Image (cartoon, rainbow, N blue to C red):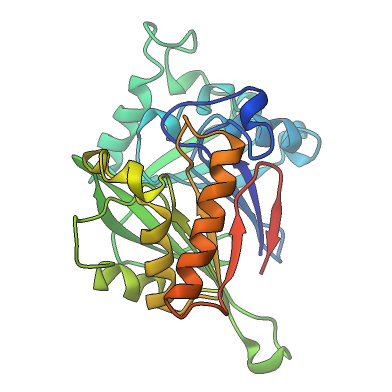
Length: 293
């Protein structure tokens, strides 16, 4: 699997000279599989730039297909959809899986942002590509793009969001035919005390890469806990408890400059080491960077 970051900010885009190193676009991650499949996780403003790159290949000729996983439908996770070039090319197809309880509810949510009051597109039906929306069943594995994908719901302020566990089987002949696992857990609300949720830890257990919400420095989280995000300490605690290989910090607060994110990443490294996680690699998500498992 090759994981690439297209948007790493939370809540609202934050372009400008103070965010140029990590990027100012909101949540969007792509996963390219060994077999050539594509999974897109979240549709924040980074989706536009992913679309621009995809148009140079089969998607530009109407021969592309991909699976989209939507963690939840807050604006910073869906605003890129109307600017995603491949949906305007006939012949492309997208299977969208996300929350909502039913496919009809999820489609209505996405239709809502296309309302003429918000968008000149007016409706998803004006997409030229095939765009199928389905509700994800919690805990029930989905097979897509040669991957096995399982979703878990976690608290996020007054609502919930989905985390995804994505596993790719190893090739025959590889040592132990080992599988590779990537967990995406953004927008994770935290209790006031008690450490990571044991069920979440079980879901993350043994992942090669855990991408975890690290929106805040701990002092900032203490005054904004009802917004439903994690600090870098929460991310580090979950990574150590789950015994993951690498931790990716993600969903940086829109008010944080690149220097603030540097401080966040350094603090996360100290938190990992202090909790016995010195062997866990730490990767700060930056727009354009790619990570291979």
